[in-house]
Image 1 (cartoon, rainbow, N blue to C red):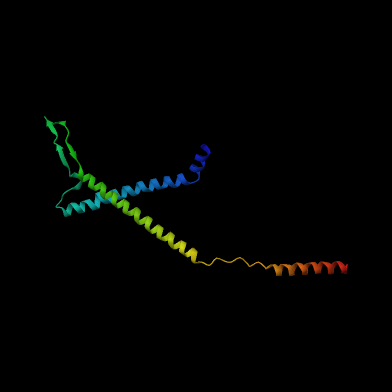
Image 2 (cartoon, rainbow, N blue to C red):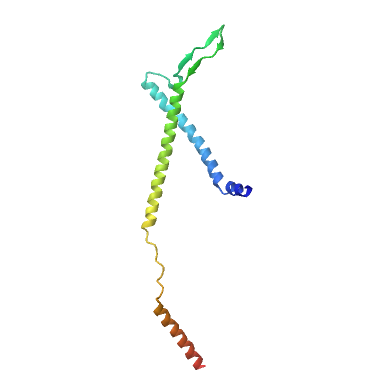
Length: 148
């Protein structure tokens, strides 16, 4: 088992996976920034300044006595959920586009490889030709022996 793990870990697969995780994390941050800083403010502008992140359904309000919170508010933060759904949709669409175009490129490459003519191996001589060659070689050997 240890040998199999070493082969897996040092074959390059784990390094490729680590690079994918790091790039994926950075991509997630970019998408989150895109949603939070560009898309949602635009929707807020269209909805007369409503901020989606602050949308919530209050189940029980906070209880405040003498300036201190005795019981915090219980609320369902559906605005934050909407932002996370938009994040997910953008990431899913981006991955779909990347996979879609990569698969199209792979199919095109396969078609090009199939279209290229495969060089044929030289044809082998038939039995009759081989027998003639063997006969000629034997005759040459006999003549050489007779001449010596």
